[in-house]
Image (cartoon, rainbow, N blue to C red; front, side):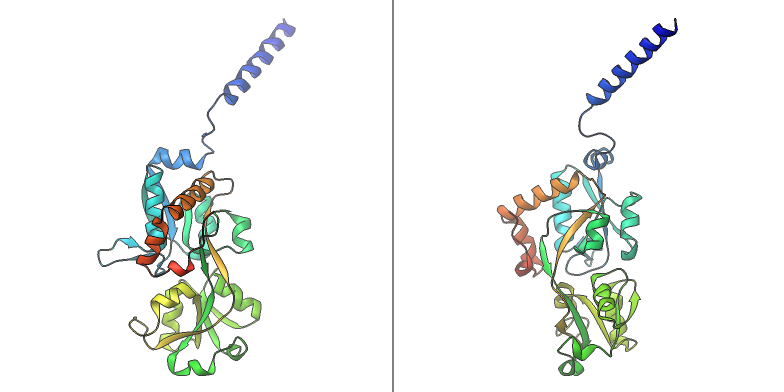
Length: 264
């Protein structure tokens, strides 16, 4: 009797394993299946022109936002944008509050070790922002060493300043770093060059600020949960949209076409 029971249990185990093996690749562990089931791709962002920002109607637009909308459409789902605290991006991703981080994110070793990341799609640099009337004195990395800086917490800019040993006050967003300089509470800020081109100088809300020296060169990518099958989907989307010209068309809308990386 015991022998028969053991044989029956073994047979049940084999059947169970066979049933599991016959399931389609898109299981509950598939991010693609997960977002298609709920019908929404939730994108974690910050207010970061020209990548992600709200227009006069309150709609999120920008180079990243527009690409995210097109990607979601290609998957047959809607897109939802959620503002996050940049320093908490990995926590937000892993807890499934968001499905990806798509916000001019620099592909640092810290980022690529914590997330599954897309291919690089855009070039960038971290640049120093100072009052325009003082810019002539701060044209090199060495010349700014004694300034007090503001930088977004958890950003590539903050990391560069820390690596140099310069004085930095972390703030919630890159736009807040600009406010610190405009208010005179910090001598300078470090932000992304693409944001600097859109946000400071003549014809902007910060006409009295300008950018001077760069601290590095870097590339942007999109972050997903570790092991996510959405990474390959996005890489395929990037390749197709670059080939048909739609990626560059979106880039031209926001003046970032020169920074776009060819997708092969």
